[in-house]
Length: 431
Ligand code: ASP
Ligand code: MG
Image (cartoon, protein in one colour):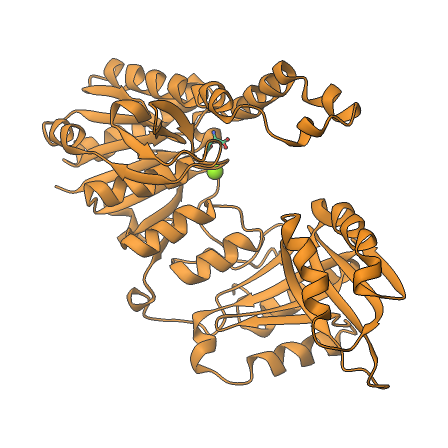
């Protein structure tokens, strides 16, 4: 007998038929003799509707129009959480009912009933503890625990939520607390791919991926798992299997991980055959900012980046050239597209203290990254990558690297070509 956590995302519980389908996956595991906890998201789209209601109640749009300073200050996060957490309450009750209708013992658990404790950072709270004693005892007696994801209880006994996409994190935290054998994340794709299959039809599903690579893939736009859930899984050593709930439940037999279904996210030691590069990620949601002719002297970078940090704008890649006259240089960096206007505004305001000739912003760029833990022990990956892009006539505007990742900034028009080129270059095309 194994202890399993199964998590079903919004599309996997989108209506009662889908919930029934999820229940069959649970039934299969129960019949195999496993003790199961099931974490559910809200029905697809439901959380967005709830957020829209909160916006409406708070008159968010009108306030923004009137340029009310408070509009950007958030509404009472405790009430936001009280409203948006309710989607998961609905699906947990519905799944428990369906399981019962299929002859299984099951009950729903809200975050506060477990309790799953969080800090007081409403709307994006962090989990501080999960008390699983009673829940686990009942699981071991054969009762399926159906847990509302995304929610917990904050100090002061108020309902909290874990940030959008947070039910992945609920599932991993629960798996860690239960010391579960595995945490299965059921979703609408059958695993993690070497790159986006819509861009590269030859992309293939990875049987295994390391936590670190998954973190890079997730933050690069492969939106399969909430980043925080992967960090937590890595920290606690929770083995996470990403798999499809859409495959017929009856067909997916016992020991799916062993049968090669889905993608197992695990420690790299568990991965025997490791490619140098495991995946190619791309992101189009970054924007480029260039400051022309800034003074080439100590302190200037601080004058540029401190006001951006104060405005809570995240900077990703940074390139600064050496100046030919020893006095002036150009500085280029990237921010999220959504932050571009604010970044330009901040820099315009700081023009006198920074001192630059001109300021430019553009969103016609894409970031393409090669990711793989194998890079740690292989030289020349960057050189190979740059040559291949050059051969296709793709100009590189900026580069950033980490131990297991090389990212280049290029013209958005070449994003797909670059992804395809690198996917073949590193031997990832399926045969
Ligand atoms: N329902 C929440 C959301 O849409 C949490 C989740 O689905 O993970 O963000
Ligand atoms: Mg999700």
